[in-house]
Length: 414
Length: 174
Image 1 (cartoon, rainbow over the protein chains, first blue to last red):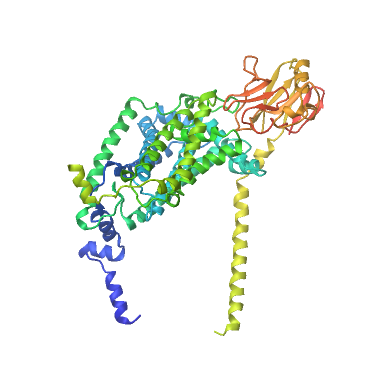
Image 2: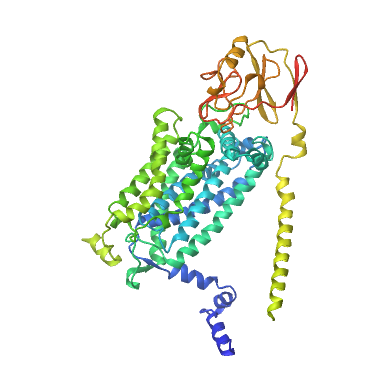
């Protein structure tokens, strides 16, 4: 590199700002990055409210971490103390009830936002090239979320905590030959107990921050390609975009406030409606509750687990149900992204969403009779959707010509 | 650099990386090993029980390694029902005689082999499942009077823990 080239290269690194702002920005280029990525960042102007759920999920995550820190000041991770320390938070700690109920209900709303966010990705084809990595990071976060939520649910050390932890950690014992040794290694004991609750607490924190780290990757990959939009077509000019601020910030804030009003209603009037009353009974390793039910957001996957009449097979089906979703960008053969222009695939995706809710319903019912049959049909459709319909429908259907963003907005006005 | 030196450089790189890799992997051993049960946990690994208060037909649940152990003083008919079946009917074929040391005493881990719940059937008022032994309420596994899986998702029989009869009425588990 000649000295002129080197000077030119260095010049591009110079801050566009002056004064204190310029002094900081030329040493730590965060200010110009925030301006480029969050103020001026061009976003398709056809986004609908489905696009607000990523931001909503992020606010849930921030809320969970903040409330988690304050719960952590009082919580004691041991088999003897855990339950009592949570009860102390509920009864004796100033506003402890509020912070704990917020933490517990925020998780549920985090999952609601995430489920809608994933549905959005499926329906409008956001998972397709060039956004495959955005989608993969998203699914990875979703799996970490489930792990974190599971670990967090064990911490109050109630009956559901204890037996949920026992059932889920026993999934590892399905691994042939070394399963039991791995289980003992993971628990640090022969059963879920003092040692387990201690490390679950540490891992609950660790994974929460791992999710924060993945959010960064999720956003970086998103900002390389820009947002998808309902048409699935890329913006052709500046005219078809708006700047992130104030248009998206205000819209997302609006959606977030509305979403949190619903949360507030549940929080203040029905704070326990999404939980299970048995978790207010202290863990008893000698007595299993009559019906062990996981948290509502695990029910679809629990239904898949129980649909397979074989222990190892059930575990494999449950884990692969999410992993398989990660293959969708490569299994979907259609050139068209958005379901608005895909007459057959649209119904496949809608049925997938309905099927998800049906699995959620049967997952909360005892594993007998008709419920087992429904869960098997639901599980079959889950995999059929990914491995058969995604490649096949791309060939079979004749998609409509996707509208440009401008034409789409005009057609909506008309 | 002459060509003859290239493979030499490659060799040095490869062996350095291999050695470094082996070193890093060895460093994992103490960390992973630290996750296993500690000596204090292992020290609690045996339990002694007096069987004399148990009448025929009664059961007792004791704790061993933090897990429930079912001790059942079996009646004649329970022993017979465990023996009068064909091994081919069993998902996890095992003779009843191979699962007990004395015919009237059955000692099994009270942990369902499916996903680790405690099966019902220890109390007189409990449901005992279709085969008169135990019934797991979590996912519907039925065990017989020998603790063998007969119906449901559990893959194997309730395991028999290691135990010895110290006297006629006293056993030591573990």
